[in-house]
Image (cartoon, rainbow, N blue to C red; front, side, top):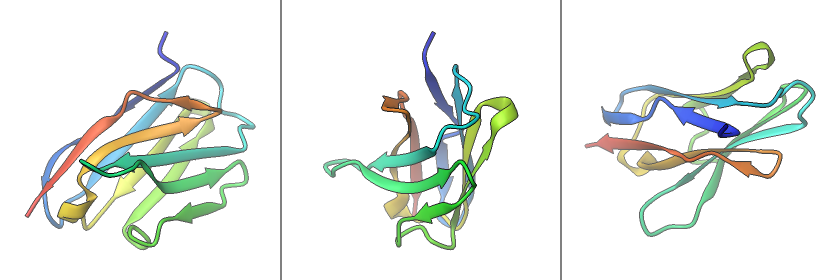
Length: 111
């Protein structure tokens, strides 16, 4: 059983929205930190957003005000709501929880 499974990626025009989901096969209740990273072609993987067990959040400057991370402990799921998407948001998005990576979901934003 795959520990983390992302979904929700796709092709969208600039200005559009997507909501990514990461479902964990383990209980996320009490997990301190849950993260979304992304990797653009030819670039290093970078942290996009983070949420703590107390629902404190962190966002990279490039997505602040446009992306929202949230968690649903009952569903063992962490979400990333992405609004006002830009072509530079294109990449593979990964969740990272307790030293585990998901397989990633592709997000492509066309201009």
